Image 1 (tube, one colour):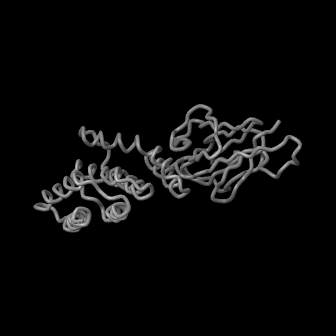
Image 2: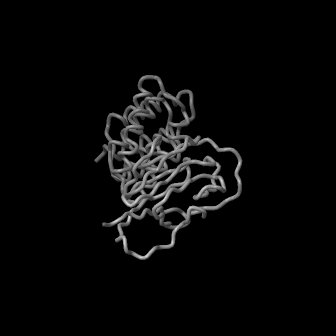
Image 3: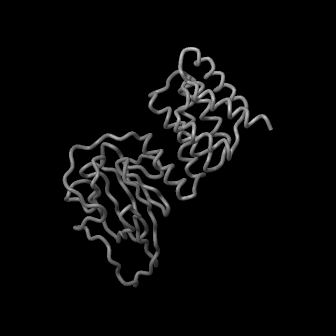
Length: 264
């Protein structure tokens, strides 16, 4: 009978976890000590058995996320999962099957830190779940898995656009994040859908694209193209604002996109 050995791929290297229970957090009493102000002192618990592994959040302030979704009770891990602890530390999960008579491998004992050791830190720093989701998407895109990134982000992005259309937008600070995520998806897939989304959201909220997001979207338009209706709506919004606001840069960019996309 084979058994599973769990590995976590971290910024400090790939670490094996043999069968056992591992407490994760900032406290020096934890088996896995994380030097991050966004992690709670006792943040999560990893349990490894012969069959696999489960991860459980222990009521932490900033949560534990698996593939962009916040977990509460014990959550079964699968090969290829991406775990975010406290909104900051990203861990790749991998499983390796071995025969029961295989020689033992060096791994963290329950009394030794497995990842990154650090001094006692001040109280937990708050982190946004939206930022966690973006970090998961960035990780998946970097691994060459843009379709998985799209699955992780699409519901959140669609909810944001619906909220904007219904006048229930939560925070203006999330506009840049939403447009940035859409532009990243548009370029990585590539997909015109997310180019159009970024323009629709900006037009709905009457907010010109930032210079950073305009550059991202420009690259996405080059690879994925753009639809006439959302671009026209965005351009018309800028023209209406130009009478009272200095938005020459944004308007010049939008008109250049129109000329480039529809003059062929």
